[in-house]
Length: 577
Image (cartoon, rainbow, N blue to C red; front, side, top):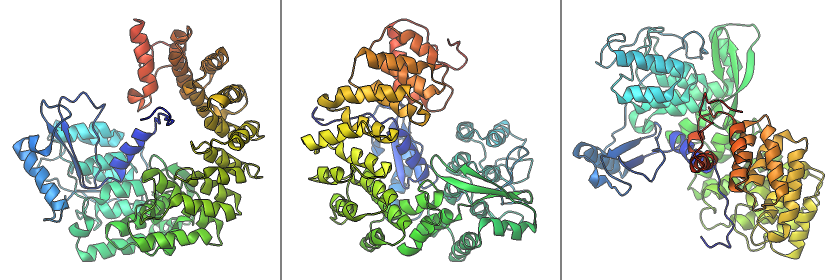
């Protein structure tokens, strides 16, 4: 990349891609070398028709033709099927209530279920390990047991139902995904007449339902079963989770309600009544099912579903946004964009969010439409502050010959969210005029801390504004802004400012109660080769959170301790200062 193009490392990019591969990826085939030094770990596609194959003793430069004979034949068969050949959809398995200590979902109880000829539970140690791993919610151990030959349909002795039912009842999407990837059968009829897939649908967790839906449901399931599933999902959605729970349990007492995170991003309401637990994500469940069965509803109905809970972090909003953003249909896009003039601000905000997502994923709209031009025109007439802020955020993700006009127009807007969006827009490399620079310096002194932080981000790549931006970041780090501390620490750490004031601010952040703030602070001191680096690394504390093993900041700390011939103090259980 030319050095005049500003670049910034995004430590959330690869986890985002990994999440997409696991949750959304479809028809993915990964061919890896068994001795490949170029990767940290392999991708693991989810249950939507994907596979990982290995070429023994090979490096990064491998092809399908390098695979062993049996795997090569399987890979070629998959590719031909995807290209329109015979369906080779996997038949998978199962759903069940949980053991004591894990929530019992609305799937209820059935009777015993058999296995697929691999022996009864208790007959094989590997199957016992699989059951224990499923109960513990340890998806990596589940994957390992399946790789060693455990039966993915082995019954849980606590329920008599296949272990996939245990995962579904516990709302454990990762374990359910691992079992499906190992060959579990979602369509098996259970003693109570249900199937594992029906139980996942009833439970109302979009993440679990996607994990259990399996490959090619439109080809795999008979027409009658497809219609029955659609009717079942629509009934749950239209009736409502609470009313359907009351109907099923006959209970009239109070419902125990709460909000939970259903996957890595979206939240959903969870309700418990009469010994059953259900999540109210049936809008997303219905939409995923319609999309996979080729019967997606009109755009107006989908957007109505999305904004029923007008929160972009809700699972229903996210599901509709994904399906509409991913569409390659001109009519769908036209109908979606038409809602930017809808009288309800929630509809307009939803469209802006779809455009923002499209800009991140694709960089431009389909069919030759220019996202930047559409959003610039929209920003000039939008009157709702929350919608305008989202429009500006989306606009910043598209190319436009004159971003300054749009950014400068809203610098003095009364809504701080809009002023923050103006700072984001004015961070564009095309916004280089003295007027844009002056506006950003003004925003560095904005009364709202979030606006000042965004203005700092916009100024850090400009030599003329680096010093005032760094000074404001130091003030933010010292101020009472706990919710901004992580991003403030990140910007300070990666800043090109190497002055003592910035290093001292980073050192002060080592006393913060948030470990990620301390990690950023130590990382910033490593980059500056500060004499306090050794003590800083010790103050980070042991790293016990999943994902740190591939963290660029941790790698930098490790390299420093290795060069200095010091012991590594961040391993779990290590003594820290």
